[in-house]
Image: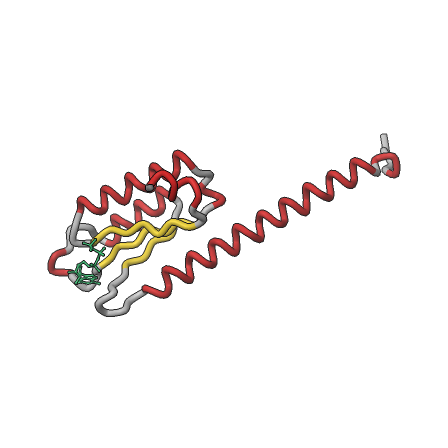
Length: 129
Ligand SMILES: Nc1nc2c(ncn2[C@@H]2O[C@H](COP(=O)(O)OP(=O)(O)OP(=O)(O)O)[C@@H](O)[C@H]2O)c(=O)[nH]1
C-alpha cells in the first residue's frame, strides 16, 4: 500500500511526533523513499512535527527538524491539533506547492509547443551570419 501511495500521490505530508525521536527518524526514511522513487520537483512535500504543545516531552527540537527540511528541500511546520496550531497552514502550503508545480508544468508545455511550432515554420526564419 505504501509503495502505491508513493508512486501515485501528488502531495506528501509526512508527520512525526516532536515527543518521539523514533517517529522523526521514520519520517526521514519515508522522505528518502519518496526521493528515490519520484522526481521531487513535481510533487508537494511537507515535514510536520505534531504535538508541539507537549514541550515537556520534546525529543526533537524545531531547529533540528528545520535543518532536516533544508537538507530535504521541503517545507516544515510544527503543529498541534490539541491547540489547533498551524493545521490549516500545512494544507495551504501543500496547495500552494501544487499550484506552483502546475504553473511551471504548463509553462514548460507552452514552451515545448512554441519550439515545435517554430521548428515547423523554420523556413520563415532568417539567419544572420
Ligand atoms: N498533546 C497532544 N496530543 C495529541 C495531539 N494530537 C493527538 N494527540 C494524542 O496522540 C494520541 C494519538 O492520536 P490520534 O489522533 O489517535 O493519532 P493517530 O495517528 O491516529 O494515532 P494511532 O491511532 O495510534 O495510529 C492520542 O492520545 C491523542 O490524544 C496534539 O496535538 N497534542
